[in-house]
Amino acid sequence: MLLTCDGRMISIKWKVFPLWNTITIQSGRASQAWLNTPVTTTSKTMSSLLERSFKTLEQLAMHPEGQTVSMVAATLDMPLSATHRLLTELCRCGYVRQVREQGEYVLTIKLVSLGLGFLSASGVVDVAQPLLERLAEESGELVRLAVVDGDDLTFVAKAQGARRGLRYDPDMGLSVRLSCSSAGHAWLATMSDEEALQQVAKQGFGTPQEFGPKAPTTVKALLAYIHTARKRGFSTISEVFAPSMSAMAAPVRSASGTIGVVTIAGPMVRLTQARMEELADALMATADDIRGASGASAMFKKRA
Image (tube, rainbow, N blue to C red; front, side, top):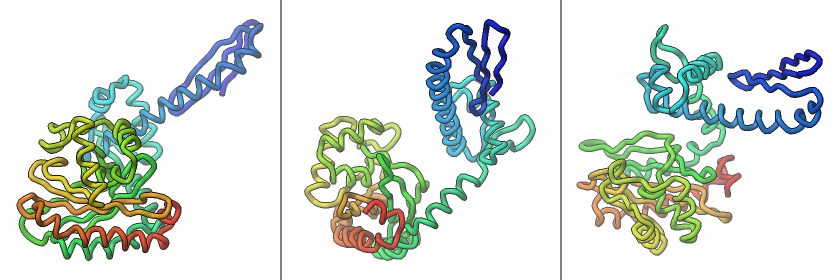
């Protein structure tokens, strides 16, 4: 912070990552202005900068080939100069690097290392992996575990059961779109209709253009999926999350609420509605086994 005074005016200049901000105060009202102005201004500036930082990291995560300053600025609707300063600061902190001078910016593995280190320390994978592999072997399809993290579901572990032919294997570590995924429907089914719709409202509905052609786009259509899942104890979808793909999911419940969701997903030609009915007992048994073993995970123990 820098403070200068010429006898009548006080100028205060402070740095909030990564920009300098300045306010000027009339000396006769300095005390009141000092109490009222900087706290709110700093808070708003910091919030905006933090949001821009995370949005930038998320943008680069979707483009492993890298993006130029102008591409990031245009996508996130940020000034070019501010985007350049932000990327420079992220480079200094080790989260981003520039491929070449005047070239694209890419993420480093620092964020990945942080995430993997956290999962390793939490014990989630150690607890769940053998159980997921058993279900993957039995189903012959992709099996995944998503954990409840506040208002989000995030996939943290998987086992691939498909040994030949078509294999469905989407990206890991992504938050689940609740309105059009089997995991989302299974989790929403553990809530009241009002609570479920509140959760969906925070994300918005996924559209058929972005996901599958049968993705629900109205409250009535979504509630039909949720009510069916609530009645049966597990959810099933076909061409809702992605074209020509089916999936099913069961919640992992604890005494205090739902701590995760187990899913099976694969091509519709193999994972038909009849096949999902056959796998229902095995799916729910796996979810129950993960609940029973959750005490060995620091993350699950905190949620249980």
